[in-house]
Image (cartoon, rainbow, N blue to C red; front, side, top):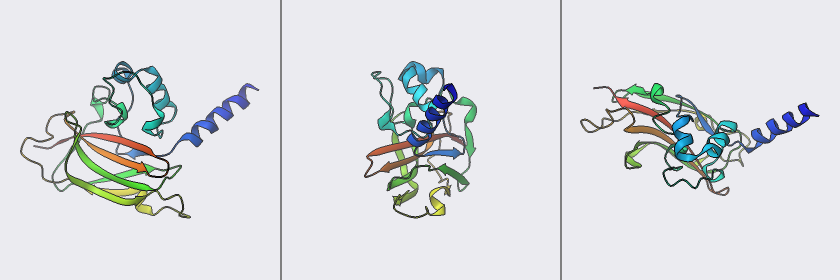
Amino acid sequence: MKYTLIAIAAFAASVAGHGNVTSPEPRGTGPMMVETCGQAVVDAVDADPTLPIEKLETDNATCNLFLCRGATFDDNKDKVQKFSPNQTVDFKVGLPIPHEGPANVSIVDTAKNKVIGEPLISFDTYADEKLATLPPNNTEFSVKIPQLAEGECTQPGACVLQWFWFGTEAKQTYENCVDFVMKE
């Protein structure tokens, strides 16, 4: 009986999943996220890293779920990537349950939660569940790092590459962030 319940719980968690970046390594959970967003949010993300933002609930005003799904830089200092202008960065995304909608990867200023420049890649139609198979570029694609203003994104935690996807019919938002600094 115990093993049946574990199997059912594991299956339920896998069905609830939708999408997330698997490479480069995105921000994960940690003690600072517990402090800012609460243990329940961290437990939900740890149980299903593909969960949409709308399934996460917190009463903590300091938790910004719409910036890296609440994951903090302080918990992810060891994951900072170093990029140069014109460098190609390869992404891999897991999409166990597709929901058609727009998606993009952009550079985001984390202090302002504002996109810097234009998206590095964008999809008007992404993860369309009506297709028999998803286009290969939905799960593996590359972006090119642009030349940024002098001093921009040179400090760890100041900027992220943010993968953003909104399932239009499902009305669900997915985000992952990759911390980076520009090589000086």
